[in-house]
Image (tube, rainbow, N blue to C red; front, top):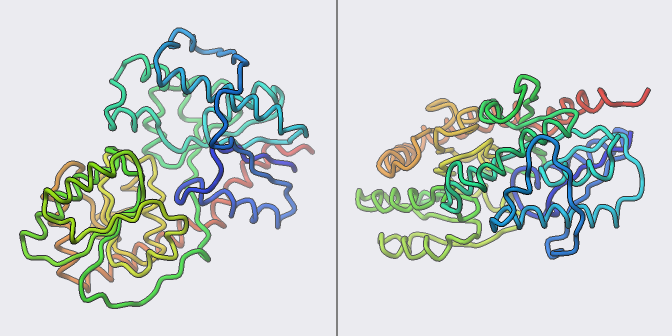
Length: 375
């Protein structure tokens, strides 16, 4: 069976689908499946000119808004690049981005397409203050879900919470399958260590949706309460300068290290003690599972798919988003109680190994793929 895994950009970023698909490729290729990865080069811009026919809504009435215009041009570029590079037939296409679905359906009108919806771009834009709810960009992006339903043979997503979110935008949400992301356990090497000062780590794109301003306020309160710590921030993004200024204003800049982008953070993460990410929205939050596989204690927010990974006080701690005091108290609890910290870390590690093993996602996807196998 020849399968194309269609991503958006190349799988270079840590976390989520980018870290999963190359390992998935190895798993399936060893099973005798011909699988390859396709994506759009990051520097390819403005090459495409072919319009797409939308069947469920009038996408072109939204043209003239900067975000929509960029989205549509990227779609045209994806079509242009696909026509340039893809010459062979496939038995199945598994797409991981709406643009990949819309582009490849133009080129392969009769090939079955399965799509995994990994996140909600519109939610990130809303939380980052770039669009307004029910504005033209929001309407365009949410209307795409119905178009994806019409142009795919099967929709999948990564958490039950996100499936519930999609229900408002599709005709039949019951047909959406849920397959959480999987992780190759061999990538993660938990390491016993003793840090004299507890080491906190977070890893994400530096955008408002990830709530790192809340984390900085919480850590400032921690310092006022006498707790010692070092905060390590891995990732880059448009909010970096603002977050660095906030750390200075809150008096914790000397206790904080901004690393920027890191290609293989899983090699680095096992030396820390507590992973914390106070997101304002997460469809799944792959980085929590990755941190768990590094044997870190977890602190997250009660949003989206995070509670499906973190069970409060069983394998981590959950707080409400935008609540620096609650986050401070959760971190303080783990800083002051190393026994609890180790207990929660081991429980999170055990759940991640059992629930998010790459072998599990391989079996689940194999079952989906077999539905379209040519007899």
